[in-house]
Length: 296
Length: 270
Image 1 (cartoon, helix red, strand yellow):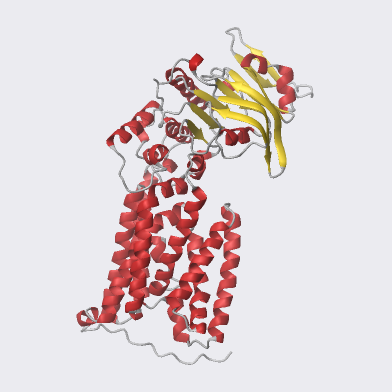
Image 2 (cartoon, each protein chain N blue to C red):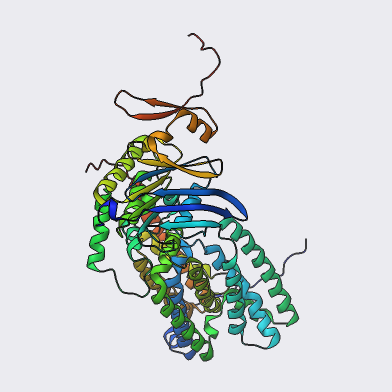
């Protein structure tokens, strides 16, 4: 075994000028961009969980990877490459079997192929390590004005569409068999949802990256679901948690000059762990209800 | 409330209907009429097409041939006059929905836009929950209540929009004896109060016998329809299930079926 080269640990230092850093233009873009993503991700999280789409959400982020590196290869905007691959991949997954087991195997296979393609494209494009790293781990501090415009459009699309289809989508998500019998277009709603999810993931990948996206799209809603089961409240709490994670993460990143992705994800996970610990005990204390007589 | 049974069209009419799924004929030669106000048991062995009959009535599956009418019209998906409780329904509902929300979806779940639930709609939801005896746990999650309670909530969702026809697929599965009897009693009460037609898919006739007026039994690839006393006969049931079934009539006139199989080995003396 050859010895690894010695690594010099960078000193983590408190940045005295963090307030100035927060007021810089790249920080302003990061705050706006991160907030837009947090709103979209928080709103969709409830559906990702009730539709058992968590794995699909994770996979979609990876499917975006070759889109991003492929875009670099052909000189197209990274957001465009991400969006095309995420929406395409989402529709593909949406059209797969309804049985969760079937869907997961196919989704996992598509995920592996997409990651392989991403590596190939990155190699062909001779993209530098920095580009690949920013796709995998996000680079919120490099969000441009143009990206912000796209983010605003995507988030507006998510909010407006959800406002229209929220109720039937809840019905189709928690109770698909009865919803279908009641004439709700379950399949069309599923495809609409997966497109919204793909748009959100396209944004979220640029904020926290492919590998950490779960913490922004699924974790806040999972935390909220521990507190309440009412769909509107879950969405509200999840949005607040996601926003708090993004804002808190950016402030901490400015204070110690470390990647914001780390802090954003850590805060989201911290909230989840705290709520899990607090509600886990309370739920365990409530026994499963016993049937009682209801004579009429 | 609808008028007297005599003035209403039948709940279900099949005229020489056959049904296919994936190119395979599930059943054929279906000719029967279920009058409005009947309580019908739908029985038959696994795979005989009991659930398929419901799917045809709900407009989820077109018939391969023949004519079908549901509540006096051709079947159509989204018919609000039908309340439906699917098979294995409650176990599929998770942590993410309260009983009350689920019942509300039965009333407003298809609506587009953000208009909140109105006071009148909330009152109807409360009434349905009250009717099935679920008021006490209406604000709990479906995953937090027992199987019998979940079944009550499912029935509340089916009746909240004042359906004229209830289709219940195996509502007694996975329930203990007492809960089975309570659900059956609830169905009997709903039938009397609301004059609804009820069709119940079941494996076991016994718990349902107190309320059934007739039965559709799927036998040898065809649906048959008879008054309940004609169906509960040893020969027919034995043929239907492919295993010996006995029928007992008690002194009070109650009907029971029982497995007629006896251990042929001599009983060991203690």
